[in-house]
Amino acid sequence: MSAYISQLAIYPLKSAAGIALQHTELTSLGLQWDRRWLLVDDNGKFVTQRQYAKMTLIRSQVVDDVLHVTAPNMPLLMAIPHHPQALSVLVWQDSVMALTVSTEADQWFSDYLGFSVRLVFFPEQSQREVDRAWAGEGHQTAFSDGFPILVISQASFDGLSQHWQQTIDWRRFRPNLVIAGDFPAYWEDSCRGLKIGEIELALVKPCSRCVIPSIHPETAEKDSSLLKVLQQHRRRDDGKSYLGQNAIIKQAQRGAVLNVGDKVEFLL
Image (cartoon, rainbow, N blue to C red; front, side, top):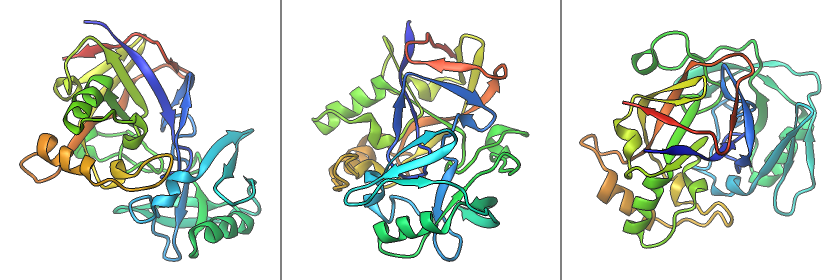
């Protein structure tokens, strides 16, 4: 059975559009720059596409460590830090130490979304431990929902596409790694890990899905029919629908790089 990385993606600003890459460095927090920036409301609570679908139309890139952002009918924003201040923010149940970026960035995003938000950054010195019940001790993530890496197989997308009767754009599910090859749909559900060269990832928790896959990544329009297909074919006893596996880094040398086309070995 052969397998390889067919897509690599990062999401520098949580809940904005992803960036497809040919290669990326692996860090202790996951893929480099993945979910290092976040929007929060006036109470410090994180803001996502779940409530504001138009966030999917925000495009970003990281240039010389600075977030550059565009969105429909908005000027280019270069979110250069200006007198950053420590700020405690809430991501689900986790209280996380973040840094403010600038009042200019706050105003830009507030203008786009139509209500008051702030842009914050996850600095190197901040700590957010992954749930020990799933991952064991010592694993970190930034502003992801809970785990540093999300893995989904192309076979799973293909299997679900057959049920939906149209091709699923992988971007709807916001994975970091898409694995392709000659193996059945949902194969990742039965594996304990992936080996990619000297890198080993542990698959530690199935990923429950929210409303976000119903949001078209190019138009921000919602189509609930995909959620119905998920519920019909991927629902578990807890009532939630699942696709993909959350992963942690079990073994990797400093500066390790992942590339599209890298061979993948499933660890059973």
